[in-house]
Image 1 (cartoon, rainbow, N blue to C red):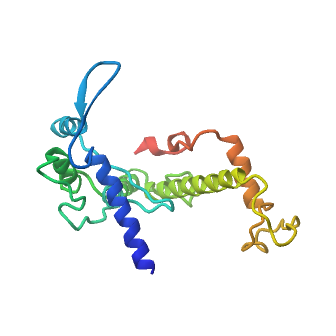
Image 2 (image 1 turned 60 degrees about the vertical axis):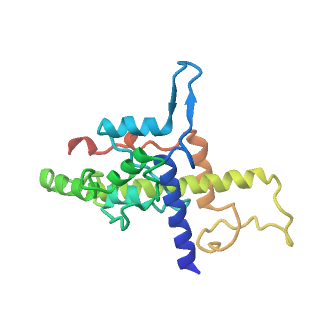
Length: 222
């Protein structure tokens, strides 16, 4: 059911976060850089970051835009229930364990978007953050921009998959070339619609993913 699917996605997100904290499965293996000749393990890198008071916050995301628990806490203040949600061995990976544990502690900021909203409203009480009434504050603007990028990424991946099919699978009937109205053909598989053409045009114009900092905003003001 839907609950089982949701739990499976959350489990996958937690596993993705764990792979960033814990470099290796049973033991931490060291590797040598061919350019410098330096040999270092992932656990040693995590140790150096931890001792330098630098925090690793893995950004795990599902194909449809669901966030992992660590980035959810950082951005939106969502509570992480377990003290060791990633199930990292404190014996085999002591520094990965401490890094993951600190990520959900009071030492690391949480709910930063709401805090950004408070600062913006205090300093710019009459201005919209995204230069539009539809984006009045940092949290709304970020959610809109991120949602747009997720939709574009999924649409681009879908179109690339369609392109790989070439002529595509055989159909039982002739293709419909007259479906120019998106509303009427909402549930068809026709690609000759305004929505598909917009994605195709946008994909042709952009060879790289959207960089949010390139969008004109007031972000620098708060």
